[in-house]
Image (cartoon, one colour):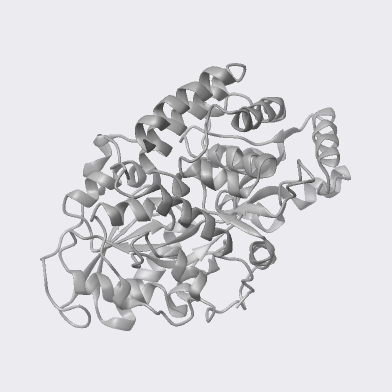
Length: 442
């Protein structure tokens, strides 16, 4: 199974989205694919139609976290409960583990989906809009507390909004403060500092980087940051839009730089989940981890010991002011049985009340998109995350959100994994990617 190709979206429109995304969060202050998973993602029960809210109304809510899986599930469950209490609407929760949700989403949306479901900003949202799989939510905007940057992130190339943001988070290099303090380490300010730090870690028997790519997508974050540091944000976004060559010298430089960094990473990453890699950092076996702030979800009592720095500059002409900062939120399925109920809940999900409900349910970074959400319970990590994203000059959404979903999942996941198995065959990997890119992007 593969997600629908976005050939009907003009490449010029995709490039425009890519270029404009650099300002989506700028200036904000604190205020693989398997058909077999589709059945697990099928919508939960309930009759079609009915009122949108209040007594007698039911809305089906599909979420990408399995029941009891941790803080992310707890947040979404709390948000669902808060909406049910406030609106009087029954919320039928359909909780599915993250990877099954991702892998089965296309079949799910073309079948009998839930009314509202968790999703992301970026090209993946735009593709579903272009293919008629999600509902136009333009009549629900503006949403109090969500500024124009977030509205831009919710907008597809046709100029309509199909998405409601709730949170965002940066990808950065995370580490345990106590481990750094014990060893006399400090966040590097230059690439020379960075290399010296990793050499010192190895000399003390610590693997510099935790690394797990069993699920296919985590390593995309490494490609993203290396490409933005070596070739710049504009090139990165043009590459994601299919406007640059994957077998050119620029991309080969990214893979070659990555190849040289691999000895500083945990070996055999394809046999390790991101949670298992995070656990290794939590135990002090690894010194750092390049991931999103959700890494705290896997660290338990060590979560309060977590800090981060942005990946250092690799080219002075490019700098280090770009990063991935994905926006999470919700869409309404076009095939959902109660469109009015779905739209009503979707708009509420963008509110400060929804963010506050989620943030009070789990002790983990959840940086609210809504400027009216409470920040009184924000941890130091949350505050720093918001500050770093607000100070960034250029913001990307993450590879599997910034490019054609078919390309990300059927081409880039296996290609990056092949590179990790055989990092010396850069010419072969990049040639294969380009050949497949030609067939997808045209």
